[in-house]
Length: 253
Image 1 (cartoon, rainbow, N blue to C red):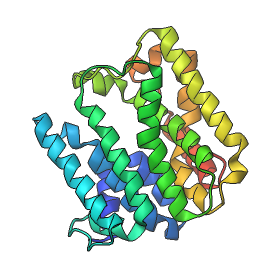
Image 2: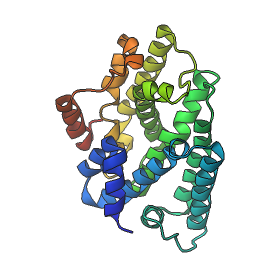
Image 3: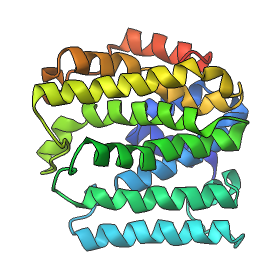
Image 4: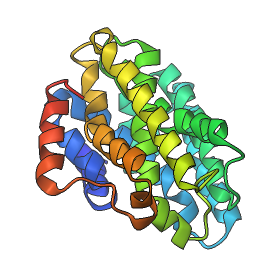
């Protein structure tokens, strides 16, 4: 029940966030590895079981585990739940409960009603994840962290569109090129807003935002060439991704 187990889960299931956590200072990894591994466990719940009811049970298990953490009860003997309990305070656990609740949308195959509904989902998931991590690491302004997290969440969502569609999901409220481009431009605007207020996030808390580093380039590609989304051609090459990670680790996300 160590951080190593969380790191190994991430290495296999979410390599981007694994690299982001590895780029963070060692003391920050004690927060990031459990949080990111928890997020992976919750995010993949709808996809690793054959029936929606089984996915509901998995999500409910996490909600109950978080409730126990919030109430100060002994953590469950689970490779992620136990280190997660050591990284959270009661408020952090309550915030993550909202993240799990929002993930119930992943059980649906219908598209989001509109762009506003998608942004609500991205804030409840990626925005909350980054905020819980940042507040556990150091002083930060919530609105700034959430805006950066929303932009990162959108970039990851757009990159996942081909896989989501292959699994029978309709991930976009409007798949027309002009609508995809507008969505990406809104993501860029939220990222720019967060960047202008970067100083309101302490150096310690900025480790929570290292995975935001590549979001700008991906969103810019989607805005300029929305056909890249359906084609699965949003991600940067290895060298550019590495440079973005280095810059983000230095606080220049």
